[in-house]
Image: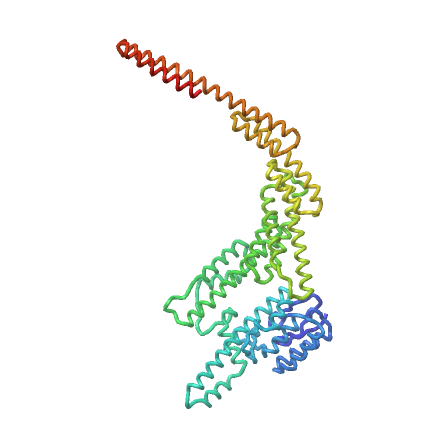
Length: 523
């Protein structure tokens, strides 16, 4: 344990090994903590922060150079970046929070600075959130100060009689005043700071009161998030001035942040309740939608692990596994594989970071394989469909040496062949038409030399031929009987309705003879 002074207000703070961020007990601002905590390093950091707050940026930067020569640490790179841009922290008169003031507004944004990029690469998730938030604020202050400088320069060039006066007026503005004005301009980054205009909305005030009460359940928090998102959807009208548009944009950002906070609280409550596997998966979905808000990604992985712990219990009694269990395991497998593929390029990063990424990939790979393994076990135990069993066999084959996958693969292959044989046998049993016997024969032929499949396929083919010949014979007799009936009907009709004259009878017999000739040709 060591005592590190707050980088904003100088309050002594106790820090221990394992800490990556620390919130000040006085100014309530978060700040980064170095990876290695020793008395020597903490004393140097305190001295560097003291120099920086006094405006002695070069002396502070030299201390960080010495620290970086000893160890590559995200906090050291971040501190040197603050010194390079001349950042000190002052009180915000509106909120009382500590805000940055930039005494060296370089033309290059801090977000593109090499030390800032290096610091974010080495930072943990908590450190990254602190650095990225402060970096966006400092970048907005830079932009505002540079715009003011360009405007003042243009004004001095345009006024022929007020050159000296304009330069004097601009020189009287202190960096602290410029920082406060810059923070007002960067209201989209600080929701609590507004410009000259503020959008007053009774519905938003009511939502704020509800959120401030606390003790809300998940449904109330989600409804409140929907209200904030609805308020954020309001857009300025064509006739609104610049200040109104800026205030609306600021309110939109504030509403979206509060909506994320409601979603985060709701998902956190579900995670802490530690319900069944499906509820944990729903919480993981909620955290995934929040992306990088707070520690949403870590919470998402935590919920996925809890869901897997609960879902893997079905492997003890596979016969009782439901379709919902299989669906949950399938979604978990997909999510773990997506996490594996997030960081595909590990070139050009530090060795420790590369090892950490590879280690996490292996963990996610093991969990994804476990999900696929349990799914294949469920299918092999409960399904009698040959295609499903063949898919389980393919899954075991892809798992390779994971657990007893090779043994399970042989078992799944046997069950798949037996199920396919039963299906072919069932088709043969209930076949009646020649086409049905042909289909049964094709099912037996697909199985090759398994059991007596070749014999059964031959029997089905013969039955199909016999059925076809029988159908042909039946069709012949049907035609003959139809022809005899037609002949008798014609003779009777002639005897009743036509005079028994010789030429007529000759014509009738010739017609009947031609009809029978055609019938015999068909047969």
